[in-house]
Image (cartoon, rainbow, N blue to C red; front, side, top):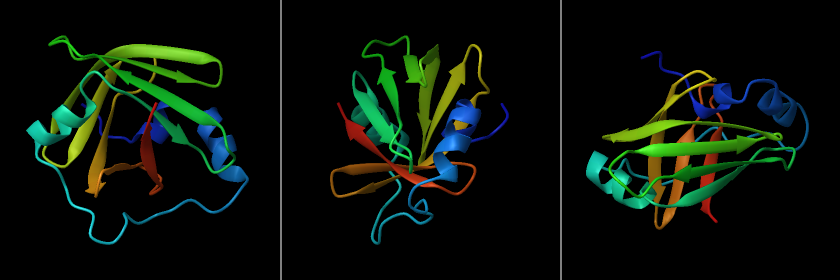
Length: 127
């Protein structure tokens, strides 16, 4: 699987988001730690999250609760679906129409962060 981050999943929508607004965060918060694959799966399974771009636009990611590992992603009036899985310190997505991706994942307290291939760190905010 080609390893790229969630920012590549939505192409031009994120490029536009990174072009305006405050500069994106490029480091995980101090003290953030990498979760085990099992811990990461437990935090994501059956949950929906929003990610906010620097320009204020958002991406919604819905993780299935069942063993299918299904995922749906909504962005810029579009959507895609596929599967998700976790590895130690990472979450990976296999999607139908946009490139597959693996993202470094860190926990800071109860907050979940991922790092995109462009170096941008974003928080997964529960819906």
